Length: 558
Image (cartoon, one colour):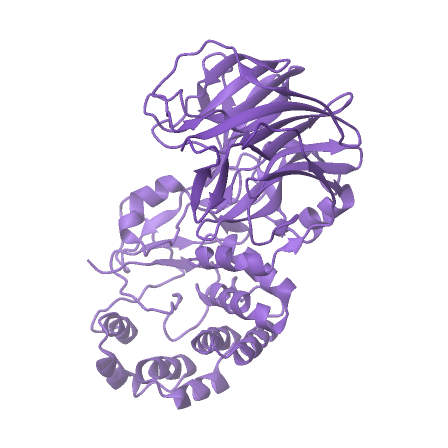
């Protein structure tokens, strides 16, 4: 079976020797491809159901894609993915032929399709024989690709339009990536050619050119001290549904993340012997703040969690803290589970409620946590707990995809109901039955699909720069290999559709683990509670205008 790609088309006809077809860095055969037509004002999104349906036809990590109309409040997916039928007339309602385009194949009378087939089979000499008569820029570029002769590349550049120049310069820059100065100068030239930032998307879209430009910038910007440009390129890669190098952007993001201006306070409650405070959640209270502070008996060393008391058991003890408005500790009580609940397979090596996220529901204190004694599969499960004082008087295991490890659910209360931000690929909101634990996903598409977002805090009411009602929450980008967590704010509108994503930032550790679990407001400030490297507990007070800059000015509208 031939490797298959997806071609993306604009709705604007254009004259080109090869027809209105995208030119990829690797050129594949056309048979059995899927194609998608993009109209003006539409955006490309990822739909897992579509991926499951056609994943055998796609190159690795290429996501294709039903369409969402911008401005459509419901965000309902409108499928317009079609199988390439290579010019044949289809009578099936499932297949559509758009009259503005023709798709060349490897037929005898279509030479360019034949060239694509030869390149796919690595028969460069045969392709060169056909290309001998091609003297236009694209033909010269392909001759350079086949022969490695840079003279053809220079000739192609001299006669190329901006879109082909962009593609050629991207290839040149990436081939010379070890020469950081040359690579950056190449990226600068590409930026000049595409000053409007559109990369001619509406006319003739070279599928990889913009991604390759961002790849070039996010690698080289650090070496020429263009930190802001590198950060923007990392963000564009991560927020591009078609990017296949998101893992590289995650790895490089730590070199570009910005330290957010904030007032930092260390919270240091009295812990039992061998225990460290970490990963707190916080809400506003009449006296000041209420906080759940996780304390743990382990340290993380050499990629292992090592108990400090010699038992080999990982234990969590949670403290309920009351703080005054200046963040001084007024009281500290150990949280005890006194509720009756049906246990599943009990993990005897990991004990205690992990990463509690505190929230208020109907004027009562609740939290969600990761529990290791409730799931009949023995896997991590999320439980919903109700507090009276420091006692858990109600514990309800939540029922959603419990055949998988579940962590980092982010709770909030709205209109008398409990909801959970479950995940971001796609953004999934669950409505929770607080008595049975049954969780039902809300219907509708909710914005950009974000593969590398995790956690982190429950959303809180927050207006955007135009005083529109919405919700603010935090997520973290995780580079698992080196255990680096970097932060972002995201803003959702009143329909819980993701609209803004901030640029990446950190509080203290740009090359370590910062784990936010709590978010609340204090007048004009945002309060964030977070743990650092599983061994300390902090609160950051951030001015509202700083948050607005990161989200609505320097951030990304999605």
